[in-house]
Amino acid sequence: ETGVTQTPRHLVMGMTNKKSLKCEQHLGHNAMYWYKQSAKKPLELMFVYSLEERVENNSVPSRFSPECPNSSHLFLHLHTLQPEDSALYLCASSQDLAGGLRNEQFFGPGTRLTVL
Amino acid sequence: AQRVTQPEKLLSVFKGAPVELKCNYSYSGSPELFWYVQYSRQRLQLLLRHISRESIKGFTADLNKGETSFHLKKPFAQEEDSAMYYCALYNTDKLIFGTGTRLQVFP
View (cartoon, rainbow over the protein chains, first blue to last red):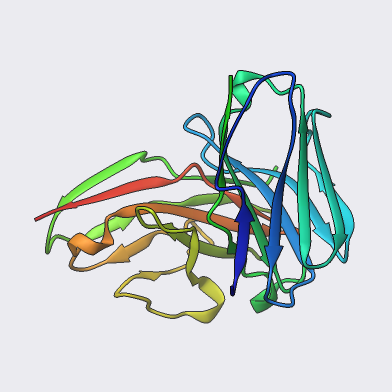
């Protein structure tokens, strides 16, 4: 599959569960991102990774834990979430973090998360 | 602080009418600005960027530094333009997105 893929596409979890979201990009990019998309705040940047190093943590609660084992994969580990964390979680990648034409972000389809 | 403002949550027009989606920004320096679009059941994707000075699907956007604006325009709206539109500002290592405007084009 080409582009940016995310699994699972839908996830329902209880507040005491631990789950992980997976993102994979097949574009040879060096930067990857997690966003949260909800009705209240349409696009919230959560984390930015460049060459597997986290360069941005946008005041995200510790119940969200990202992991970037290599430049093609990005995970978001979830534990003890709250119902207000229910949202669409989007992954994106870009060639790198530089300006100009290199920072066009390519988005995945998202994981629809429901926390009960 | 760097910020992107899209004042309209919803813009409804009839097919063939002109469209202008507003975007204002605050940024100290030379801004790089983008418009992203999300069609129903499709993923978010880049529509155009100001440095390319391009027209995509009939849409154009001009950077006005005096008014700190980057409004998206199309002279004649089509039904297939119905979507969510996000204005975004590049800042160091990330994009700052506005809250988005939903465009509805009625037949």
